[in-house]
Length: 221
Length: 90
Image (tube, rainbow over all chains, first blue to last red; front, side):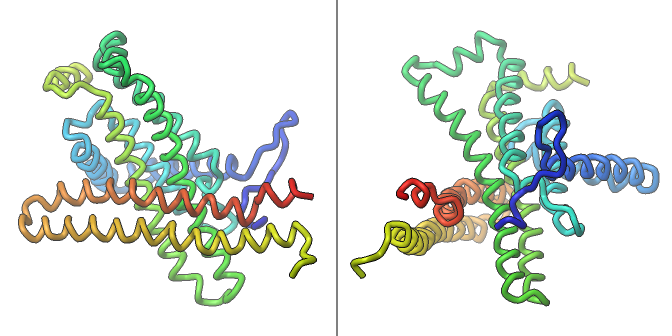
């Protein structure tokens, strides 16, 4: 259990910094470097990635995805890389620490309100939250519990995959963990998709249902 | 059997509860997910054009169903590795 829970790397002004944070720094450097290099060598590959994310988000939201693509796309890329960075030796997934999924879910929580207020205006958005007034407590509980469930889903999936690999490794170290590592990679990519899709669903639920969204996107460009 | 100390008793009960709990907590979501996949496959077989929509909805619904199993798993992990009762009873 001690090997797979995050451990403290160094302390900065008496604040312990765990390996989650340092791995995230390495990830940021890696993603930046990869996008620069791929952009120079094979720009078509990056275009294909952006196209894929655009189609996915538009499919889930049922509307053009331009205003939300920077946020949701970087969410998807971050979580996907964070889940599969486990295969690099000496690095552990940041999502195996519950603080990373919690931070991502809190960002989604605030962005739902941000996009909702930008689409409907402050008063319209508040009115939409409490359309019959007795729905307000239920709406608040719904908002909080969906944040909790986003956190626990990502954390539980990644942590359980890491735990299963560790248990099998302690029993049969040689070949047996390999299929489970492959399964954990698949789970990680699927969880990145699901986290992004659920964030898109939550954001779309806070927006207006009608067409004028299209003017918004055209003025955005 | 009568002279077990409380810590051992709590550990035994915890292990039994963890075993039974993980069975129930994964079997029921698995059955329900199987039903959802069954219906979605029937829908795809009847209307292959709607496969893309069905797949997206199915994945999101599966994630929501799967989270109940994850809750059970997390509770059992807490029981096994960070049991709050073991320290409190002594």
